[in-house]
Amino acid sequence: MAEVPRLEVRDLVKHFPVRRGTFAKAREYVKAVNGVSLEIRDGETVAIVGESGCGKSTIARLILRLERPTSGSIRLDGEDLLAMEDTTSARRAVQLVSQNPWSALNRRKTIKHTLTQPLKVHDLVDTRAGRTVRAAQLLEEVGLSPDYLYRFPSGISGGELQRVTIARALAVSPGVLILDEPTASLDVSVKASIINLLIDLRDLENLTYLFITHEIDIAKHVSDRIAVMYLGRIVEQGPTEEIFENPQHPYTQSLLGSVPVPDPQLRAELKPISGEVPSAIDLPSGCTFHTRCPYVFDRCPEEIPELSMIDSRHLAACHLMEQGR
Ligand code: SF4
View 1 (cartoon, rainbow, N blue to C red):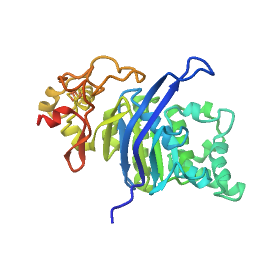
View 2: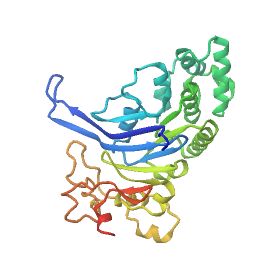
View 3: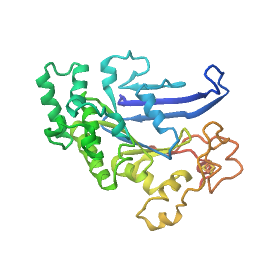
View 4: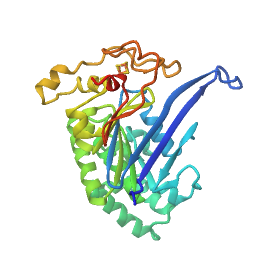
């Protein structure tokens, strides 16, 4: 029997109405997510990469049930997440580490409060003393000493704060972590240490990650598979190594054109991306990348390309695939 994916989204769509006044009828929609399907197996890390505004953070919000999808389904261990009651166990199962630890933590509360609160809310540890001991353990798991329990967010660095938000997410023993640009607000020197920590924790605690980033080189270090998104659609997905060594979609090639690629022949072929991302209110017709694509031809503005198989695990949505390029 086929393994049930840890997390599975199917044909996910999210369109946000745009209203010109509080009671006005929506005449336009921001088409943030336009039919995304993705599976993540137990213990796997899948990275969603793409420029800002491509819909990747909206997918995170839909999985966390902070937004309702316009249509489509989300399953966790085979169960319909959208139909699950908002019980504490359902809320525990998927946790978020967001890009900005400063806004994720209450500046007026100690780190001890931040870490013991979820243990109390979810009834995980009965006594106050027990919660303090567990909070100290969580700090140690993320590489901070128990002394940090009595400090406030304003007194510690950005990298240390992000370690605290990771510890808070781990406090409720989730199966899945959604990492939404977790290193985007950090210095380059700190980024690497947070990435290494996340890799260690995943291996140690058998976590499943959905890693959202606009930095494809970071996705390379963390992920088993990459899904490349453009204007609300996945345009290419496959094993990380395959995406880096044999990118098929012109948008993926453009993203790789902005990072160092070891293969000199591939490097010479990659064309850096130009132009701005079009508005998600007024999506270009056909292949939405056609306004920026160096290979655009007659069929591209006419017809939306479907994701088609390059091999059993590698897919891309580009009419050039059918031309046998
Ligand atoms: Fe470019 Fe056409 Fe392929 Fe779209 S379908 S990526 S416009 S070649």
